[in-house]
Every structure is written in C-alpha cells, then in structure tokens.
Image (cartoon, rainbow over all chains, first blue to last red; front, side):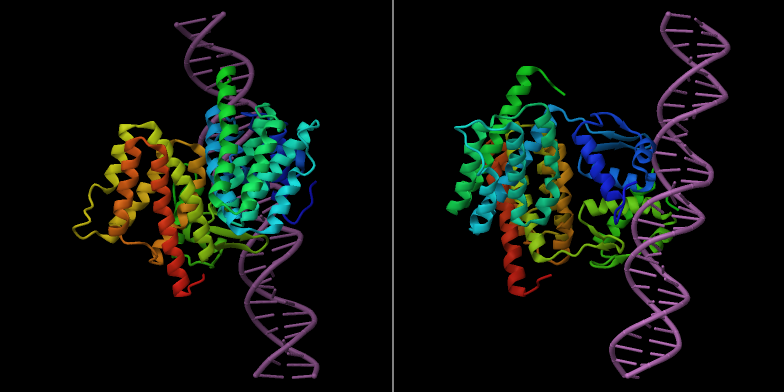
Length: 215
Length: 215
DNA sequence: TATTTGAATATTGTATACAAAATACTGTGT
DNA sequence: ACACAGTATTTTGTATACAATATTCAAATA
C-alpha cells in the first residue's frame, strides 16, 4: 500500500516507470482492476493517474474500451523531434539573451565529466543528455514551455530502440550550444540547438527508413 | 441532465465555455458539488473534466484545496506567445514544403471575406484569426503539435482584455504567411509566421507595460 | 470445419458513501 | 472591539456499489 499526501501522484509515477521500462508493453491494455489491486488502491486515484498519463501521450484511451500503452511509430517520433527542434531553439535563444552565470554553470555541469578522447559510458551519457535538454527548458522559466515539454517522454522510446547517435558525435554539439549561449548571441544559440536536434531527427529518419522498421 | 456517450466530454465543454466567457471568473474557486448539481451529474465525471482542463492550463489545482480558474499574468501571456512563435513558424515551414493545393485553399478561405479598404467586423475577424492559426497547426498533421497547441486557449484572454492589434494591421501579415507558404519557400514561410506572432507579442508587451496592468 | 448466436463474464463509467482535511462559525477572554 | 480556541460545517480524496457496455466462450448451425 502506497502512502502519500495524495495517492494518484505515486500511482502516476509507478505507472510511468512501468511504461518507460516496458514492464507494460506498447499497445498493451491497462487492466485497471489488476494494476489497482497490485498497488493496493482503488480505481478512483488510478483513473486520475491514467488520465494524467494520457495528457502526456504515454497512454491512449478509447471510450468504453479502456486505456492502452501508447505505441509510437516512426512518423510520430519524427514529429516530436520537429517540435523539440524549435522549442529548444527558442529556449537556447532566451538563455543566451539572459547571460546568467549560474545558468551556464548548471549546463556545463551536465557534461563536465565526459571526455571524448576516453571511453564514454553510454548509460551515463544518455542520462546526462536527457538532463541537459530538460535543464535547457527548465532554466527559461516559461511555464507553458515546461508544460508542453512532456513530449520528450518519448525520448526513452528512442533510447530503447538504440536509435541514438554516439556520444562522440553529440558531445561537441552539446558544448557548441553551451558556448553559443555563453556568447550572448541569441540567433547563434537558437541555430546551434536547432542544428543539434535536426541532426538527431535526420539520423532517426535514415536509420528507420533503411531498416524498414515502420512501427 | 446532459446525455452523451460519456458525461465528462460535455461537462468539459460546458466548463470550458464558462471559463472562456468568464461565467467563472479568473481566480474563482470551482465548487465541485455546486457545478455538478447544476449540470445534473455526480462529482466523478466532473473531476475528470476538471483534470483535463488542468492539463490545458485553464484551471489550476491545489492539493486538498480544490480547483481554481487560472489567472494569467503578463509574463505568462508573453511566454505563450514565445512558444507559439516557433511552433507556428515550424508549421508554416512544413506546409510550405508540402505544396498542397487544398491546404492553400483552406487557409485562403479564412480571410477571403475581408477587405482592408472597407470596414472589418472585429468579432468576425477575431474568429477568422483564431481559425486560421488553428488550421495552420491542424493541417501539418503532427499529433504532438496538435496536442500542445492547447496553450492557445489563453488567446481568448487576450481578446477579452482588448490587447489585440487591428484587423487592418494584421490582415496583410496573414496574407503574407499564406503567400510564403504558396511560394514553397520553407524558410520564408517560417519567417513570416514568426514575424507575425512576434509583432503581436511585442504589442502585448508594450501595451501592458505602459498601462501598468501587471496581472 | 468455419461461422454465428447467445449466454456468461469481465470491464468501464457513473453514482454514492465515508473518512480526513480545510474552512467557517461561535463563544470566550482580554 | 479584537484575538483566539474549539466546535460545527463544508469540501476534498478515496473506496465501494452498481448499471451499461464490451468481451469471451461455447453450443448450434450451415
């Protein structure tokens, strides 16, 4: 039995974890009673959590039929990258215009432990990568931007499918974004952030086209 | 008593209407029992509707205290415009790349009834304006983009406060966006869309700064 | 054997019940 | 009159109950 100020929050977190780790598989129907029983709660807070997950595009609901773990196809992954490209571009621009030192130090800290000339631990780097992009958004302090950044949940899908570029390839791009922000040139910062995500998107497109993996 | 395949959908629509028309005023607490009784439903589907509205930033919930109609301050309005600028820019780019004739005709239809040399009906134009921007997003067919476009709900807030530019000022900009899309030049289309929204945002900033209206 | 029909079962959506927490009220003391 | 404590009322969050719909399974038919 989960204890908390509100039950739906921990239920939400647990369900999200189960989805991202594929304990609940894409396309799988979420049997409310079964999960609720496993977590020791009733369906009421469970539904609340499921609805929140639906608003974050991690599950889909079909009226009178139930909730299903969202399945992402190639086009949907690419569409999310299209949105991220311009949103993170805007974020980088705003941060560059601001010239805040603590912002810079926080962004730097994400990658200070990595050196392209040595080996880079994939798992650790993937986490740093995720943190960096999330931080870029958070630091702007734009509530609407934060709210809609849930679209990056799908990132884990990309990670799982091994569709990422290598750390050696992206580390320099990450530092280029940070340097552009430091320079105070908003347009340069936006361009750097956009170029980085556009390249990832293009990699995604070619990889999936060549492998013929269309779901 | 509302009848429908699911009760929460019409409840959601009715609540949204009440919020956008200020039948429920900004900052006002939403007394669940009272509204539920008025609509002839129980709190269960009502909560579902409220949660959906929360995910769309039209209401805010404070745990153990309830739901409140969201109050937008200047900075939040501007922040939404920041997001819209880049998102609609991206949308315009994609549409330009596509060169689809039916897309063009749909966009044109929004403003075909207006002539800057004659008088333009404010209400009618405001509706056409909203339709146009929504259409720009819809036509791209990007699910994530559609999902996050709820941020434009606060547009009505701007309308209510009379912070808009005149039709005479924006009609030409709207046609410029359409023409850029027709030309097939993605960068030009993106630039036109961004310039349009950036100008509206700047108008918003100066108006609110000068009037000293900071909430 | 494949298909259809219908009953049995399971699942959803809504209503109601109830405990815990927040709010409003009332009377007391200063 | 004002502040405060303690009680009553209201409101939320969760659990349970139940009707309506969807799904499953098995027997009957072609």
